[in-house]
Amino acid sequence: MGHRESSLHADRRIFLTKAFGVTVGLVTAAATIDARVAVADQASSTSSKQAVASAAGQDNWRFCVKCYVMFYYGYPDNGRCAAGADHSMAGYNFDIPYDIPETPNAQANWRFCTRCYTMYFFGYPSGGWCPVGGSHNAAGFNFVLPHDIVETPNAQAYWRFCTNCFALFFWGYPEKGRCPAGGGHNAAGFDFVIPHS
Ligand SMILES: [Zn+2]
Ligand SMILES: [Zn+2]
Ligand SMILES: [Zn+2]
Image 1 (cartoon, protein in one colour):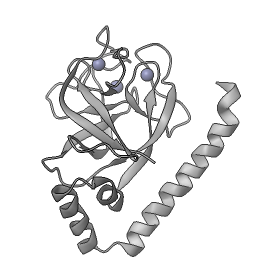
Image 2 (cartoon, rainbow, N blue to C red):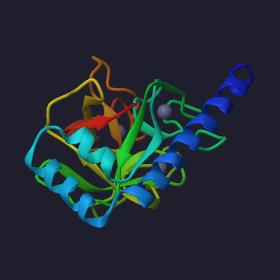
Image 3 (cartoon, rainbow, N blue to C red):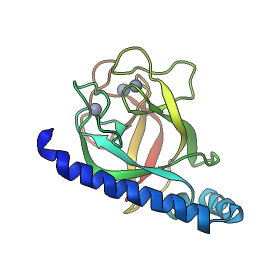
């Protein structure tokens, strides 16, 4: 962990600055009408990345190389991994839309778990299976995940819902990661296509 700290902290400052800049840009430049147009465009075309980027998104979501879930990397610690200790990130910096209307190609009710930092589906009465023990605990934004649209250089497909732990996990490898419920994750439902920088 120690060997990567200095560079990662620098990276995080860059990410935070970037995120802040986007927020300020939205407030000053994007009128409410523009936001509505962007959402309408998203619903009616496959060029969702631009529309989603026009709406709010949170970056610093990453793939965990140990358990294959999507987890939030924006805190000094990295939550709890079903493979032991904390999550370990690699790959794209995902920028995930939130607090926008659900559409036929975007599912709401995805949330951050305060205990394990995983992105999980909050739309069922039970809260899935958290690596910390018990079920996940939702907080923060209501994320709305694009699905069943064309993969682009700025959006990665093969992200799926796990029926056992309710996490969003990457299904694109032969192995299916590590599920807190035991074994690998088990995919069902939509093929999510997650925007990234
Ligand atoms: Zn993990
Ligand atoms: Zn959890
Ligand atoms: Zn699972």
